Amino acid sequence: MADVPESILIDDIATLVTNDPSRGRGAVGEIRDAAMVVQGGRVAWAGPRSQAPDADARVDAAGRCVLPGFVDSHSHIVFAGNRSREFAARMSGQPYSAGGIRTTVAATREASDADLLAGARRLVGEARAQGTTTLEVKSGYGLTTRDEERCLAVAARVTDEVTFLGAHVVAPEYADDPEGYLDLVTGPMMDACAPHARWVDVFCERGAFDEDASRRVLTAGRERGLLPRVHGNQLGEGPGVRLAVELGAASVDHCTHLSAADVEALAEAGGRPEPTVATLLPGVDFSTRQPYPDARALIDAGAVVALASDCNPGSCFTSSLAFCIAVAVRDMGMTPDEAVWAATAGGARALRRTDVGHLAPGARADLTLLDAPDHVHLAYRPGVPQVAAVWKDGELVA
Ligand code: NIG
Ligand code: FE
Image 1 (cartoon, rainbow, N blue to C red):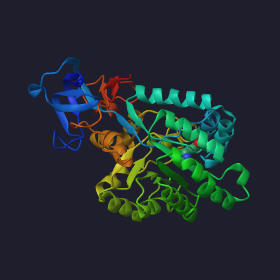
Image 2: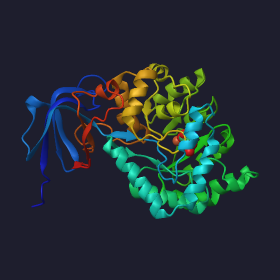
Image 3: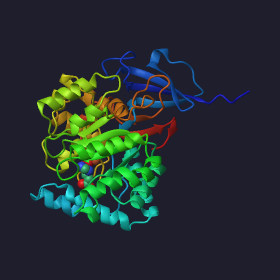
Image 4: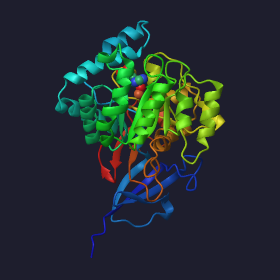
């Protein structure tokens, strides 16, 4: 007879966030005084404690909160060096410009594969200890075929959600020949990189890639089986949102500067079976002293909103989704429920994943135990470490 995996009852959960509205209160499907059963790396059961079935083993949540692990759908954690001095200069009045990316490109090209992998692993561990169980990782600091390929190979060692971002900025060698760089990215570089990635991304912004160039990049990726996502509307209004919606991208990220037409487009795309998610990155707006995006307007209009870290050495060096939630609640008009949903279920939608971001039976047992009685404490106690334990695929990982 085949071995039946051990079932584990997580008992005495004061608040269980399931993100399954059929199972509990509100969009976060909150169940008070709950329990859940995990078996074979998946959620087997979730519901009121009084109805909990028997299990082989028991974990005592001791009156604390369990929620799905965070799904961080946007990061750039394969890089070398840091840009703390650039941050300090910015806090003294210098504006953020994408030009700083080239500093990291130079350091990343110099670094060995082993050093890049060690750095990425360190940041994955840091994120995991703060409750992140799914993390998207982009290339974009190599900008040669060889360096992009090795950054993607490193990313693939730490996640399944790998994104080719050769179109981050024009590589320094091509400063006088941006068309030549576009030919490289959409041709030989894309050919070499596509097998390592699931997604293709482009920085569609003044100073990086314009609408036509961005469309070329995303289309070339699609022709090689990659799914599009977009960096758009970060530093000013522009074509990023419009293009993402037009191409049915899974997500358009930043959305700091939106026109009324952009909000309308995201609302329309939010109603699609496979929406283009508006992924907001509050840490970037915090660390670059930009205004915060109007999450309230997006949600009220009907857009699907996710929160992600954008962890990178330039515009935002945080891996903390708890921090992003706190800012989104304090300054972007989101309720605590909406912000927690956006950092879990919203991130899953931005990655077109149905197995993570919720805790209904059948979902991956990726979950976080908070040292707090409910998920509101994530925003209510900003800056305080509250993650007591993290499970991924039913295994204790932090
Ligand atoms: O998402 N905006 C483009 N790329 C990153 C920043 C990269 C950097 O400054 O190194 C971002 O903010
Ligand atoms: Fe980014």
